Amino acid sequence: MSGINEAGVRGGDVIKDIGTDDDWQPTVIESLCMNCHQNGTTRLLLTRIPFFREIIVSSFSCDHCHWSNTEIQSAGEIQEQGICYTLKIKTKQDLNREVVKADSATTRIPELDFEIPPFTQKGSLSTIEGLLERAVSGLEQEQPARREADPEVAARIDEFIKKLQELKDVEEEFTLVIEDPSGNSFVENPMAPQKDEALTVTRFKRTIEQDKQLGIRADDDDGENENDGEEPAGNDLETMREVIIMATNCDSCGHRTNEVKSGGATEKQGTKITLHITDASDMTRDVLKSETCAVLIPELEFELGMGGLGGKFTTLEGLLKDVKDLIVDNNPFVSGDSGVSDKVQKINEFGAKIEKIIAGELDVHIILDDSAGNSYLQNVYAPEPDPEMTIEKYTRTLEQNEDLGLNDMKTEGYEQEN
Image 1 (cartoon, rainbow, N blue to C red):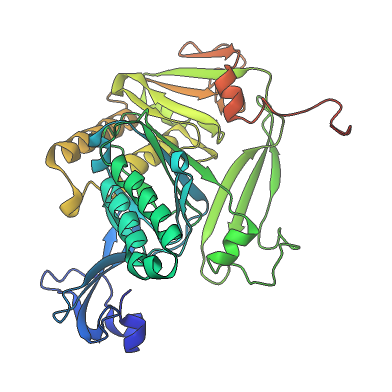
Image 2 (image 1 turned 180 degrees about the vertical axis):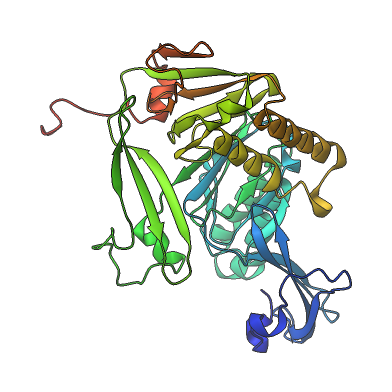
């Protein structure tokens, strides 16, 4: 945040709590310009973006050298899991996708072997094209001095900059990966609530090193007492299999989380459970959704891929509410200046349909497709067959085995040296 630390201003002294005052204006402070070292102006605004929660928007400008800089920082909590977005960019239209990139995120373009490590750039609210332009600007910044000190290196960087700029023409497909251990980054799905075939979203458990980088683990904590503060319990579902319910409670702040993981092995076949929802009473059915399970509602042309929402043990109503929260309530591009009217209307209509399903007013099917075979939906007619539910076992494809990490798994003779 340009000039704030240098001016000795503390965020708590200038940033007000979020309120309902329509006349509330950004806080304006005088701060040092890091370009010409004269005084410029920084404007700070604490606001709330769904899914990204509270953010600090900082805009710096200098009247002397006309240098300006805009960035964001997360003012909310670090999420329980990290998140990784992998986007296949095929057309120039993909460059218009909006992106929330936290400063803890790593940005990669595998085709160019290019990576921007975490904490080397401040957080930003931009587009894919804006991210590329920012990367080019960062490389060009030191080029004048580099050309004098090492012309050969500077020439190679000029060549690389040219390759980055050519990406904006999208003459060939390329991949953008944004991996954020804080879980506070976001890449727009312009087709929401429908599935985006070009975008893959996965959630992951942070490593000890990532926890240290985020400041939520002490530097000398190597995870020897990893179970402190957690209350793991094995719960045997008689009609299913063993699951592990991990609950974390904090006596200091009252924060609670829970996560469900399968306690058994990956099944030999995948499982596809289809339920025809005919009545509001179906909402009370228990659901075990593993982290490898996709959720589909064909009538709404909706698909939430593997990894979405993580593992959950809830009711059907709870699962649908979580879907609505993810797609509608926690979508950062539905409200404010980022919202495009037709897109907002489409997403809000989807949310209204979810509410009708919960109320039993909309006749739809919900499908749980788990390639690992570790998900479950309650049969309320047990031990008799459920007339509204079908369970199909299927053989996984090579791609599904790859997603589960099974293709390279060695289960026999693994103790032998290669």
